[in-house]
Image (cartoon, rainbow, N blue to C red; front, top):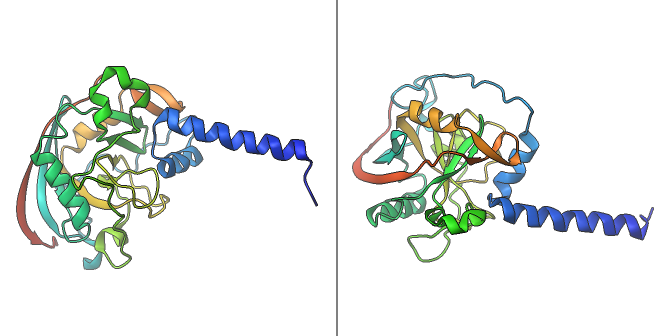
Length: 248
């Protein structure tokens, strides 16, 4: 059955409007679409309220525990967050993060997005410029000079582990378009499609992350997803290399 022309035109206009809205909100398109499906009027409480030294479950199977190759201390205006990096599972993503950190690239960059009980997001250099506020979330730079591909390998421990609470992953608008933006999960998100390269996990400072995730926001995508009202900035990132060992 053919649809009336007027109906088809209305659908086409709707898709055009959705594309413009995506650019305006400045959210990576794939993550934005998932968040839109998950939106609720009242966010549910996280199952876990506290992380151990590492969120890797001590009862988990060995093949779901990623190797830590680096440790990064992210100093923010809300406190310190220490993350472990998976240099074996996601070598390019980790190299990108390490090189950008060494260049002091992240200094002054803001957390531009808080999606309640979902993720917090940062890494956009445009957030250093208040005049580009409407563009926050749409920028990014790669240490390699151009976007780099996703590293989502089915046999990698990080992929088998999935998007656990405290997971650090690349944020991008489309496949193989990674730059400097990344997000951190505020809860376990098993329903999130395996489309974003996981390259680390929070080791210490989950309380700081929870504080960031609980700030007042200016709604953008929906009432629980938007820009923090209060400025939350990265002051510095210090990375050190560690011996790559699996944790028990």
